[in-house]
Image (cartoon, rainbow, N blue to C red; front, top):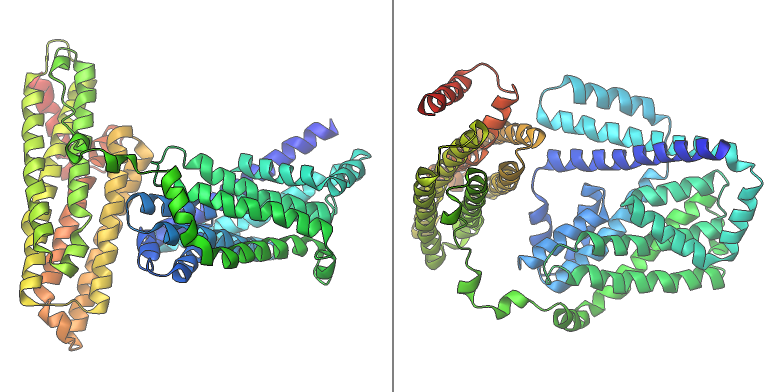
Length: 564
């Protein structure tokens, strides 16, 4: 019975720890906005700077694995090189170790303060940024509370007759301790949470220091293996980083295992507290791996590029050009036709996303050919909408259900919004980019930063909107509406800051005023168009207030019933 109670309490405390780490990560992501891409890609020319970017990204995201997955995605999109991406991953591992160093200090007296302040900000304040700060503070408090619960859960079995035997075995058989650390980290899906738990075990005397060090080194291997597991659905190019990371970090952890068990290095750290020795070893290990790996990253590029070759580069471009998802043979089967229609609207949304993605780069370069290509893409978007309209007109309505009929209408309305979004890019933003190049204008540093931030938010919201399109998830739809409101707030703030710079006599702000303000307006319109997919989902679930918007939706519902 004691063992069962221990397992239940430990499982509950561990789940709280995982939840708390995720809560802090979510709060930081939402408070920062989608600036992670720029954190990495802005330093892509220097391995040292990329490593530093990885450190900062892991601290921001509270997760080396999340930072590493982002780096893999950027490598697949050719936004960074292999060497830059691997430097980012290794830097993220060190950043994660530094997080553990901070959290392992465990200032338990802060828990009630963090709960009080964080709870007030999260529950009582409506503004987005303070709410997310509250979320972060609550998450940190829950981490500290979870560590306390882990300590308390182990107390009843500390004096168990089996514990000294198990502890002695792990201390004697460091390979088993190493593998146990790897397995636990992999199962927990968080090296931060796993190592904090190991540190707690050592702090309360359940786990010997020597065994704890072996377990922590195993956690590094488990974290590298987890990166491979989570990236399994990515393309061949993206998979280069997780396997290269495993080679460096995995071999390093095995080598480190023998070093710490056959040399007096752990004994030389006896001026630290027992639990702190684990954290110090973890930080030192990741620092050494980073320092010794940076000079050889270029050597690894060729073999990993050969092993994980870019198959897509061998296929003619026309074969990979996405064809229409509309299948005429399904017109007599409404349920399948709706699925086909959904795929086509998703394809259309990806086309619009491809148009939006290079906007700020084209503002900087003014590349005529690229601007012309974006405008040409708008014709493809228009053609997709025409195809959708014709397809919907041909769907057999004789036995279509009310739900399918509603879904068809929502998809057509969103396709129209996407077509308008394409027009905003082609006829507004590309015209402004051309005018900026023709006049030889440059934004002020602050003005360009504001536009970059808003453009990043549009791209992030597009991804969220397209996920809502497929999932019809209520929580995601609600989050999309929150992002839309936050975007409008930031657009107003940028407009005010721009006008203030003009009042202060900034020459660049004065010269680019029209383009800056028109760009703000276009980005806001673009964001509003791609966010429209959330409205019908929120309406069906009673999440919209009684406004003219709802009245408009109700009118559409009644029109549909009459036409049916």
